Image (cartoon, rainbow, N blue to C red; front, side, top):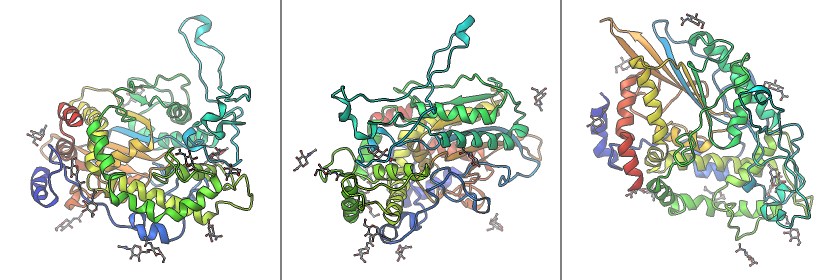
Length: 477
Ligand SMILES: *[C@@H]1O[C@H](CO)[C@@H](O)[C@H](O)[C@H]1NC(C)=O
Ligand SMILES: *[C@@H]1O[C@H](CO)[C@@H](O)[C@H](O)[C@H]1NC(C)=O
Ligand SMILES: *[C@@H]1O[C@H](CO)[C@@H](O)[C@H](O)[C@H]1NC(C)=O
Ligand SMILES: *[C@@H]1O[C@H](CO)[C@@H](O)[C@H](O)[C@H]1NC(C)=O
Ligand SMILES: *[C@@H]1O[C@H](CO)[C@@H](O)[C@H](O)[C@H]1NC(C)=O
Ligand SMILES: *[C@@H]1O[C@H](CO)[C@@H](O)[C@H](O)[C@H]1NC(C)=O
Ligand SMILES: *[C@@H]1O[C@H](CO)[C@@H](O)[C@H](O)[C@H]1NC(C)=O
Ligand SMILES: *[C@@H]1O[C@H](CO)[C@@H](O)[C@H](O)[C@H]1NC(C)=O
Ligand SMILES: *[C@@H]1O[C@H](CO)[C@@H](O)[C@H](O)[C@H]1NC(C)=O
Ligand SMILES: *[C@@H]1O[C@H](CO)[C@@H](O)[C@H](O)[C@H]1NC(C)=O
Ligand SMILES: *[C@@H]1O[C@H](CO)[C@@H](O)[C@H](O)[C@H]1NC(C)=O
Ligand SMILES: *[C@@H]1O[C@H](CO)[C@@H](O)[C@H](O)[C@H]1NC(C)=O
């Protein structure tokens, strides 16, 4: 029983909050081994193409992460009936964020004909079928404020960020692959039935851009869909709700801890090499030197869209080579593993900052068991810092930076027991396969989230996150 397990580990691992939350450390691999990250070699997966060959499908691909597909799907024993699925995914590949485009080199982005699309729609007469309008970003040198937002904007018609053509294509394939696995199992028609299916996005337009591609693959006969969205002030999907306690815990174990700053100090020589190409100042205050995130984003977005690595605008022989880029990619994985799994307080941070979404998930699962909802499938399109803390709460055994299109699937199954009553089981898929965690859940506490009694999951959530009012109070301190 889960509760006694937690009571047992309580004295060993230590109580970290008002709840019975326990941090189970991840596996030690090359991903979170700083010696290997700094002194090893190679990229930790595919970083140059959306395509993973079938023979190795399931490996890490930053440009297009593995997801559920018919070819690899593990069909459960026939006495398990699929009742409900909830999917949360990261958006697909995109241009860099504006904050990451201060890299002063000259590789430009062209978004002609690629949207994003924005227009209003009414319900009467001509208003129901207006002209599709795409945004085309532009700058004008007469506007003296232009350069204050970063040279990446100048001469590009892209919004930073926006999903690229390749990312829309990946979104479509993602939807079509999910349809091939789940349409028959959940009796989904080719047209979307809003009573059976819900899609949810965040206020960042790139999640809606992905939804357009995804839904075309999932429901080929629907062209007009309402996506659910919560206000930023309390959105659980983007986790933009206010939780000052989570923020201070995160700061304490990152900028406030040598466990974090050591990799920045050890990586100082890499910063010198990267800054020499980009022109970023040693005393930069825009985040280029507080983590490797910005360099990672600027380099990986180029490579996923088949662009060359950058050279200095002053000296075209001074370039970022592949081995330097690969080191940045290893550092990125290391940072995500630290943020969400390696740091002792990462589980506590995840529980506080992403607990609200998990409570909504538990509510959806309970409605299924109680038979009070017709919804068969709920799809969430989100961000890396949504999947990050969620993987932290689930205590995945090998943490990575959730790449483009990363997917977690929660499958709820019903199985009749010998006494005739129904039992419900949860299977959690990551990259299309049952998720390996460090939790004492699953057969023989193996941590494999495959057909675990759903009550064990509910108990774990109760111990780790608590109730809604408890979470709200814990966030305020
Ligand atoms: C990497 O290798 C260098 C030179 O061999 C060594 O000085 C340094 O300590 C190593 N770094 C780590 C983190 O192992
Ligand atoms: C970490 O990586 C270094 C360098 O590759 C290796 O020598 C060491 O054995 C690794 N440590 C562990 C615990 O795997
Ligand atoms: C990196 O920054 C440069 C300059 O701001 C910009 O031109 C480029 O588009 C940025 N991003 C990538 C991935 O290239
Ligand atoms: C779309 O994705 C499919 C499958 O990954 C790939 O074969 C095809 O080349 C892609 N098309 C474009 C235009 O990127
Ligand atoms: C599947 O959907 C069809 C059409 O909506 C409906 O007629 C049928 O009863 C459904 N079957 C099951 C098993 O729910
Ligand atoms: C740093 O890491 C050590 C060893 O894992 C741990 O004992 C310590 O609590 C950590 N400190 C912080 C602030 O995370
Ligand atoms: C890559 O560039 C770094 C400097 O940024 C240099 O030290 C290293 O030797 C280069 N590697 C190759 C294979 O050219
Ligand atoms: C290029 O040279 C100019 C003039 O010395 C300097 O201001 C600028 O920062 C340099 N840019 C890069 C990317 O090094
Ligand atoms: C960085 O240092 C340079 C030279 O010392 C100085 O001119 C500049 O104002 C500093 N920038 C910031 C953001 O502190
Ligand atoms: C974890 O966070 C709690 C609450 O802020 C704090 O008291 C504790 O010292 C932290 N533990 C570590 C190892 O940083
Ligand atoms: C679970 O453990 C028992 C006894 O320790 C063993 O007989 C059984 O094979 C294990 N089951 C699995 C799935 O590993
Ligand atoms: C949640 O856990 C608390 C104690 O940690 C317990 O009192 C309560 O009954 C649990 N609630 C549920 C719904 O299991």
